Amino acid sequence: MDRTPSKGAPSRTAFVSAGRLAGWVQRFAASHGHPVEEPHDGGLLLRAADGATALLQPPWPDDGRPGRGADDVERLASLASQERKIGIVLVRRGGYAVGVASGGRLLASKSGSRYVQSRSAAGGSSQQRYARRRANQADALVSTVAAQAAAVFPGHSVEYVLPGGDAALAAAALEDPALRDFARRPRLPFMAVPDPNTTVLKQAAADACSIRILVTDPA
Picture (cartoon, rainbow, N blue to C red):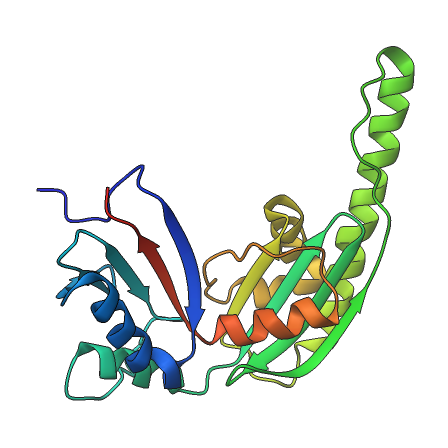
């Protein structure tokens, strides 16, 4: 039997801090009926009486430092409460923000902008010139992001790396030689964010240290 959340049903993602997790679970139960709890891929799946599900995923693996508590929800909250240092790399066309987060707060950061043209519908030689120029701009952005991250990350004992924004650009930045040492750190799940700036980075720092919850409505 397939025990994963229902495919095709409406779903949404929420980020809930460790201190708010117990209250969130109580409200979920009040809205959908008392849930059955099932371990699921390192997290916890809540299957409510009305068919709604909530997949609770820790911000990082326990890595030999499991959370403590009387039940699975308490242990998950305890794990998310641990201080882990995360190197964050957010990049999209025209902007970037990098930083180190711990306990939901930024310890150090850099942000900036660099223009990368959008795709053109033109054809022929003009399209080829445009594509080369766009590729050069993207390469310059990637190099800038990697250099800034390489200036921010050292000295903070970064344990994990969190990419976000544009998946291809973030991956390219982490593959840059400037980030060779940090590219080998375990990567947390990719985070979708709007155009990066300091405000977006602060929110990403809070979300990176929170429990990620995928709520699926009854089919």
